[in-house]
Amino acid sequence: MKVQPFHALYDEKSLMHQAVQQDFSKYVDHIGSEGMQTRSRLLEERQYTHLSPLVDELIQQNPRLDSSLKKRLELLRTGEAQVVITGQQTGIFGGPLYAVYKLLTCLKVARQTEQLLGRPVLPIFWLATEDHDFDEINHLIVPTHDFKTRKLSVTPPDSITRSISRLSFDKTAVKDIVRQALCTEQETRYTKELLALSDRLIETSTTYGGFFSAFLGELVDHDIIFFDADTEAVRRLEIPFFERLIQDNDEIRHALSEGIRQTKDLPDTFLNEDAAHLFVEDIGRELLYPDADFTTKQGKTYTELELLALLYTSPERFSNSVVTRPLMQDYLFPTLAYIGGPGELAYWTRLRPLFHHFDWTMPLLIPRMGAVLLQARDDKRLNQHGLRVEEALQNGIPLTAFDETGIKRELHTSSLLSDVLLEEIQRIEKQALNTTGIATKLNKQLQLTFEMIIDQKRRLHEQTNRSDRALQYQLAPDNIPQERMHSLLPWLNRYGLDLLRVLRVEYEQLEAEQLKIMI
Image (tube, rainbow, N blue to C red; front, side):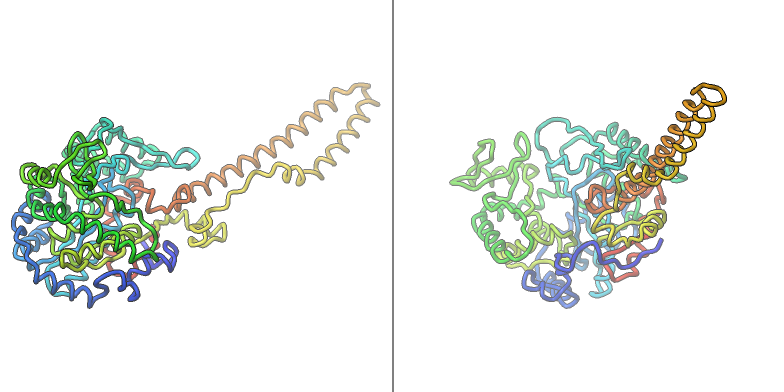
């Protein structure tokens, strides 16, 4: 494996570049090493009275945790340890590659920050199982026979919008998707091992979040702490802060509007300014809207007192929106930094006034790794085109239409010679035999020869174009970045279950966060 810095994934104006520059400080509270040290000192001054039961829950949720990490996790009980966090929807087999890159970045930032602060820093992966968008997590993308994208999906059990954590894990469907996906790949010496691992983890998992964490945990030796907030035990720990979110809802919504106003020069993100930014589980997961009381789109109404009473009797029915989840994260954990992608960095900047409402500062915002995986054969094909991978990502792989007219032009001289030959054979046959059959057969054979040449040229062209379509699919399927479409599954099939372990070692030796990875 050859890993090197790469600068073609995000342009210089993107938040992935801006977020590490000092100018970004006008949108955030802390940046860089000094900011990390300041944030750590501020966290020491805050009270986290729930840390001991939270650690108990983390140990229960991570039964195979690496022994060294488990010892350091115990230091979170007293606040001696602090955390860096990333998170993602729990897609099948880790979801798109960028979720894996988030995980690896979290591991790297935790290690670096531990050295900087001289204190334990724990990597936490927040499983977004409270999310109800099943279509975001229920599929793998594979190539069709002509290298278009095709979605292999698990069918939702019904049309009710439940949190992912409340859905039964369809083991049969997930196993079927794995086999269908691997049918698009050549069998390798790793295929049987990969299938055995996936079957074992599928059989022992009961939720999509559980399968996600078991699978990715296995690939990094369970050296990261996965956290599922959508459990009854966690919801009980969250009651005091949910109470604040309900009671301070007007102020929180006004703070969001102010945050949006302050960041109008950054890339746009849609954050619903009309919502209360809390969900309640009724028939399904329903977003609350503020009015004289709190209402849902289904017409259910709660007074503030009714909502608070429900919170204390059934906290498992409450969950956060994309706006309030970062606040709940800061309430639960002494969070030094959040690792996110470009969209997340954009909406997090809007939340700064919300943190200030609670007399907190924001955690540092750190861009996740961005990467493109490149096989040796892909690199060879790019060289044949005279293309750099940067050009291919920006402009795509050139595909040319078959030029039958041009081939016929190339054969024009041969066609003229065949006409002359045919005329001479016709003359000789007529004089010697007074027949035309031999010349007629020759004419058919000559025409067939030209057609065979054109057909063979067409086949060669199609083979070339097929190779180029395959290359386009590997680099940017449907002209969408590889990291947003590819899953980890085909890469593990090609290069083995040690792939993430090897990449982690290589990545942690580099300062760059955009990588070209030759494997």
